[in-house]
Image (tube, rainbow, N blue to C red; front, side, top):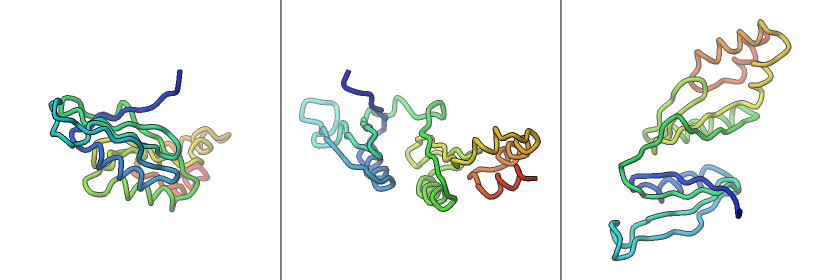
Length: 157
């Protein structure tokens, strides 16, 4: 086996999405672009697939049409040590039509689901103080974008 990658099905937005994601993450790049020839159902010269790497992880965007759409059943998790890093990615991913959800979840403008999680989250939800963990859970349930200071304050009481 040569490896595992992720294929994302788009309705004509694969190249735009790949360029957007590559611009958000370090160590990212566009790879091979396969374009429709004259014999396929797609517009000749338009993108059929585009490969890209995000922080060293392989993805392929496929312009497959409107038959399938993304759902929250699969999401990409991003982990952050600081609020500034989390805020930067949250703002970028919710811009231009992205949608905030609950508990650190969002959908970007292409409909892809993401979870933006502070690395300290496990410590406050599974910490040695069960009352603090319950307070942190309650605080998280009331948030859209997760706020590290508020989660820690809830845990601390």
